[in-house]
Image (cartoon, rainbow, N blue to C red; front, side, top):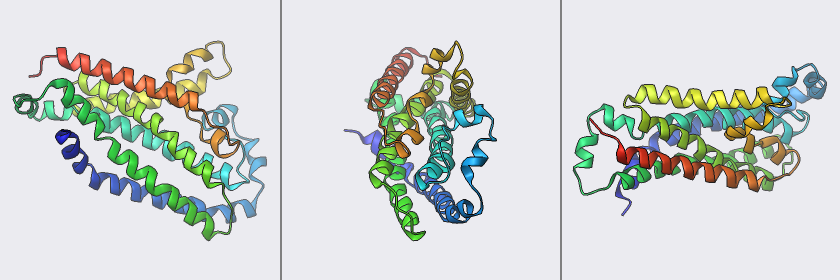
Length: 262
């Protein structure tokens, strides 16, 4: 059982390690810069000059504390945007990649159902999900310790734990694109564009009459600043993301079962 998931997961190990190393380097840079940046100016005064839409989009609360600085400069950017786009992009290649390369017919000639193939392909995204969220809390802790700051590690761990449903939802958006489009590059661009567009849409409609429509965006349910600055954990939002992920995966499975593969 799970042979396809294990095989696809092993193929993702090298890419996951490279991505994690890159984000670890970015994290280290941000943490090491914190003392010099906060010592040079009152960053909260600078925030007041930011456009309200920018403050809303990145959930900026404060930059004068290590928690607020990490929430804004690291998590709101690296996790919400960069990793969200990465998982959407990765999800979009799961099915379309094999179809485009002509390997899907060979795979489906084996004694395996389309449902199992799609579900195990999607399960391979757990490799980058687990690797990234296992390594980066350690990097944050060591970096913060090195600059002589204190940080609530429970909040850091929760920021990573609650990011997992968000990233899975982004991957599920990519999976829908992967089933809908037979060209991997087109599916990947569509999925990444959809995730980024939903991020912008949720930010733009905030405080307007159409704000309820922002509930369609996964970013509505993952707010790093709430976790790191306020210590508020949105478990209901995580449950909504997991439910949305399940719905998108099941819809993709049904679509794939009925679709002709050339």
